[in-house]
Image (tube, rainbow, N blue to C red; front, side):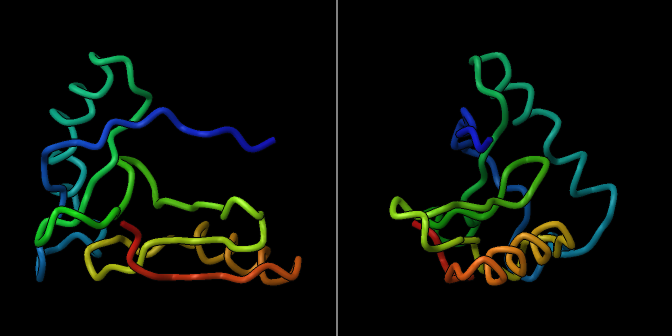
Amino acid sequence: GIKPINALVIDYDRAAPRGVGAVKCAGNYAADVKPAKKANEQGYEIALYLDAKERKYVEEFSTSNLIAISADKKTLITPASDSILPSITNVMLQQLAKDRGMNVERRKVA
């Protein structure tokens, strides 16, 4: 079943506006080494990044996109950002949710 993730909202930026966050390149992974280690040392499974510009919107986890299900279980929510690497897994989860009659929201997540 679905289980929540124990994540640390990290005080680092993984990608900058107009940067290469939405491109598959080694630099995007190297930037996460220190923050991921910090999260792990504090007992968290993973780091969670906020947007680099305003630092108030969720972008993604250190290793994956974020998918959330609303409390009423009727809506799948995923952040919209130009700094997030496109994910076929995210696209497929959105389609599966639609196929099950769920609403899908790709939007800023505060």
